[in-house]
Length: 75
Image 1 (spheres, rainbow, N blue to C red):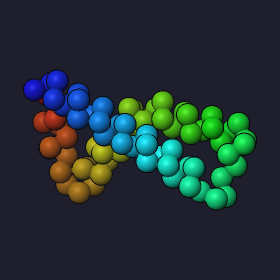
Image 2: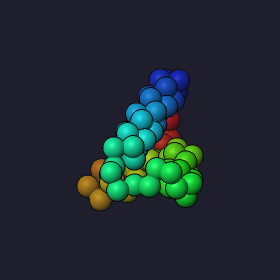
Image 3: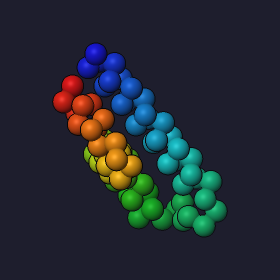
Image 4: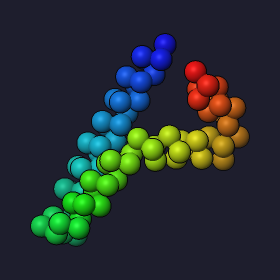
């Protein structure tokens, strides 16, 4: 069961990374030759395994579904 959750989490993280890179590359106002832009994008991708679950927990708690997060977290 834990293996399936980890695989699902990795797939979601990969999809988010692809989406972020695609959004960055399609943005006409983003400076693609500026190293700072790439550093910020890289930091966002590196910390996404931390920020995605935290964001999900915040959304669930705001919607009153926090008990689902506690159940998944305890698996």
